[in-house]
Length: 489
Image (cartoon, rainbow, N blue to C red; front, side, top):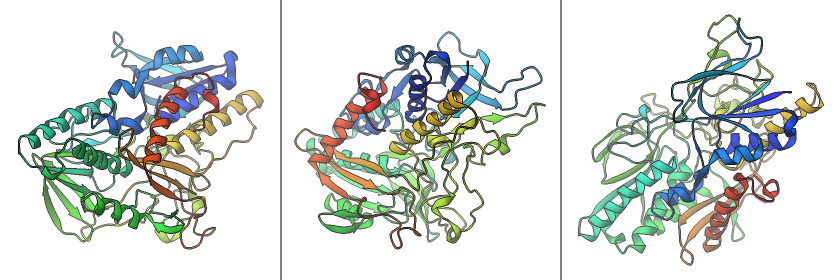
């Protein structure tokens, strides 16, 4: 019997584990190690953050789902990996610490034949002084990164609505809380959902909304922007985003590295090297991501963390980490199999793999401060990669160690995104966009780097309904309900 251990139960890890359990059957064991007791459909957290949904609407308990799938579930945090085993254990293993009530502090070594690192990110609030504590419940700002964060954000948001109804004008500042953040999309959705809810509450005229982001232009989204077909024309995401912000009277600050947050004020540095301050009454700033801090040890106990992980804490895979300057970057730099180059039975997927470099052009201020989005690896790409990695491992378990690995590069992958701009049965709005490929290939598609026939976007009520349907569809899939395998990632 072979044992596959999956670290993480988010979109990528949950996808990998559930498909692996289905393909391997009861002859082999799938183990999921995750500190969380619940699964969270993160794209809907922005609705929780404005009161459009409750946190119960976007989460469910993992234990019964894994029991149904025949998956061994350990509610615990992975601490370290021994990919060569140790002097006491011939097999490789991962050391874990339980977070399950009643077992807190207990530790265990879990042996494996294959390992998938799908731990996702550490929400690195500490990178910006004043941004938030380890739980994301900052003294000055809020977050929508988890369901609990989003519920807290809504509590604070409702207070501002009441203040405006009482005649007190409010300043809103939404965006990224550091120069190297990703997930601009979540903040983008949140600011327009706030704008929508303020209109519904009849207090929009009492609010000043401002966007702050590390993007060098509106509509970069961490993918270097895109040109998409809209109403028969090729439109840049810059024009698309600027139009949306202007139509809804939302101001913006871009190319900004937030370097400090204090009560009611954000301090930032711009790409031109200048410093600024922005006051706020309510602020939601996405934190930067880092690896979760896993360590790695050789058989003799020596530290090999730098061999297995990149400096940012994400696991090294089959990417070209020596591409160098931006001018040398190619689509082929991006990983295809997500296999660790040193230990062939370890893989990483979702946010947990180390990208070779950003997708957007790297930029720094004259002061040497890097300011630009790190590459997104969430949502649809996470699920697709998780499934492909699981397929590779299952083939090697069932067909032999020489079975070819499945390939799914983000440079050959399309993705769809539905960005909400307001929730409502008849007045909801969302921008439905597709992009192909996610990582631009300027050799294959000179000029734009992408195939404009498969990169398009529209905004309207239909997009909102698509996002609402997808919410229910993907929770159905994650619960392994009837026909779940037929629902695409």
